[in-house]
Length: 110
Image 1 (cartoon, rainbow, N blue to C red):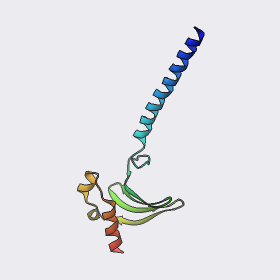
Image 2 (cartoon, rainbow, N blue to C red; image 1 turned 120 degrees about the horizontal axis):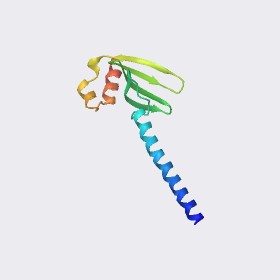
Image 3 (cartoon, rainbow, N blue to C red; image 1 turned 135 degrees about the horizontal axis):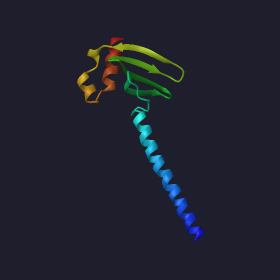
Image 4 (tube, one colour; image 1 turned 90 degrees about the horizontal axis):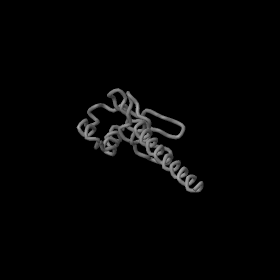
């Protein structure tokens, strides 16, 4: 009888850990956006593309303005402030922003 109570207690403990893990991951997912970056009130990463190991180019929306930013392991650099005309706002609203299209426009200006 003592072994059965020990087994039931262990089973309840394992189920409790699984439930806590489930709710903990749901809570973390609400704090972290799809990009893996903690969400912010005034800044949002619109899109990101990896260009190498630990190197990426990111479009950031800060208070309604868009910026093209280069991020490396040791450096973050502003490449260009994007005009509102360069980003099709309808695509942004639909969350179908085509990063390659914007990057091609950026390459043509330089």
